[in-house]
Length: 225
Image 1 (cartoon, rainbow, N blue to C red):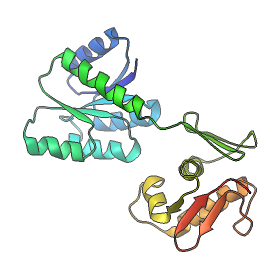
Image 2: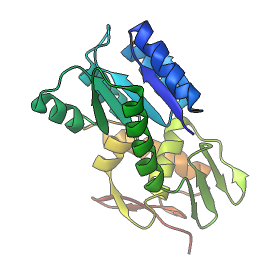
Image 3: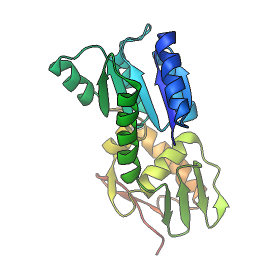
């Protein structure tokens, strides 16, 4: 069973979807605006989102782009627009599947089941161990030699991205895109956070243990020798 977020401004339709999903033992939360949906995704971390495009505060396609900037949760968009160009645009914007309104509850359940099956089969590992460093994405905790590290949200995101790419050089551009969600920015921001992270890992740039700078390229995380 899954945690499902239903984003629909029509109260009658929303209630019907909640009832159908709940009867199949899914845990259902709901939102009636795009901004409420973004808050729900950030706070409740659903397994899948059913997103209506006709929202009162924001165009559904724009809401989809904003959602994609903060989460990779599978999204099924529900739309009354059945033109091929529109469907392609939604898929390119980050939708995993779509339903054309009106649709039956059985159709929704079938699409949702298929999405969940695919996402669980391809789900990446949630815990990473590199030497004495362990990063737990689910609990958003990191341990060094079994001691819990006191990390800020950004420090954790930076460490997790590097740890799950251990042994690979990660470019600064990738860090800006994946950790800061920016297409461009100041390298000094990365340097400052790396400096704070090194301090908490008990190392310095001149005496690295885990974090190694590859001059002119990026950063690589390795287990201590």
